[in-house]
Image 1 (cartoon, rainbow over the protein chains, first blue to last red):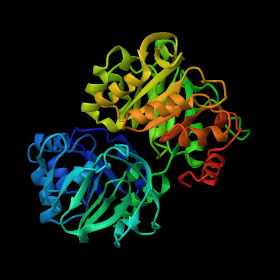
Image 2: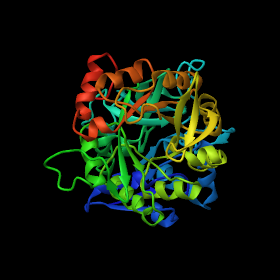
Image 3: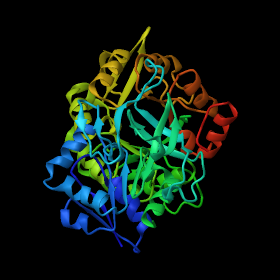
Length: 208
Length: 251
C-alpha cells in the first residue's frame, strides 16, 4: 500500500511526515510529493495545511494540474483522503480568511472566523480540547468519546449538511472538528501532534 | 472545554541539556531527546527547547536535536534561542519544530514577526518577551536579559499581536530562577491587553505557582523548568494538582 502526503510547498509538514512514518513503520510506504502521477496512483492521500485558507489554496493552484489530480483521486476514483487543519477546511466551497477564496468544493460549506464572543475568548484556539464524537467514523475506531486532541486555528469549517459532521469541540461556540463523507475524512485538530491517541487516528486511516 | 497547558522547558547548550532531570535510570542525562521523551510520555502538553548555545560554531547542534526529538515526541515542540530571522525559522520548522519562539530579533526588527507569520502562519510564531519591572511598568529586555530596551512590555505585547504572533511567552526577569512564583501582575496585565494566548514563565518553585499563573495571571499555559528538571515534581503530579484546584487539564 502507498500513502501519499501532498507536499504543495506551503507550511510546515514535517510533523505530519514524522507521525505517518512512525505509524507506518516498514509496513506501508509513505510518499511525500506533489508529483501528479504518484498522487493518482496512491491508495490513500493526506492533505495537510498550515497558514491561511488563501495561502494554502494559492499554493495548491500554483502547481499545475494538482487540483485536477486531487479531484480525480477524491471525487472520481473515490479513494480515501484525509484533510488535516486547513487541509480539511479546503474541502469547503469558500473561505473567508484574508479575502474570499474558492475552496475545492468537495463538501458544501464555508470557512469563517470563529465567533470569539467579542473578545471573550482568545484566538487562535490553541491547545488540547475534548472532541464530542457525534457520528461513527472509521478514523475514530477505538477512540473514546471526549478524547483530547491538539488544536491550533482561528477559522472553522461550517458544512451546509450537518450530517457530514463526525465530531465537534466546545470552545466559544460548538465547533465542527471532524467531518466524514464517503471516502473523505477531515480533522480540524492535529492528529500528528495529539500524542498516542492522535497516532491511533492516523493508524485507523492507514488501515482503512 | 479548552485545557490549560503545562509546558516543561529544557535548556539546551551545544546539543546537551544543561539542567537535566535527575533520574537514576537515565542512560544519558544530557540527552535532550531522551528527556523530551520522558516529558511527553509523562503527559506534557508541549515541549519547549531553549537553545542557550553561546558560541557560533555549535549553533547547528540544535537542528540535529530538534530533528531527532520530532521523530519521537508527538506533542507540539517549540524551539527558541538565537532565532534571528526567517531563514532560521524555516530551518527549525523543516527539522520538525512546530513553533519557533523569537525574542531579540522581534524587538530589533518587528518585521521578522510580520514576515514569518505571513510565510508560515501565526500558529507557529511565538514571541518571547523578557520583561523587568521598573516602578509601575515593565520594560523589555533582549539578549538573554542583558540589554534593557526601555520599551514598555505591555505595549510591545500588543504590537506583537498586531504583527502576527500566535502566542506570547512572557518571562519575568525579576522572578526567573528565584522559585518564588510568576510575576502575576505582569501576566494578568498582558493577558488582559491581548487577545492571543499568553504562556507564563519565570519563577515557578511549587505547584501553587502554576495554579496562580493560570487563575490570577490569566495565562493559557504555564512554562516551568527547574521544578521538573530536578525531579521535585513530575508533570503528572502537576496536572493532578491543577485538577484538584478546579483547573481543567488534559489527564
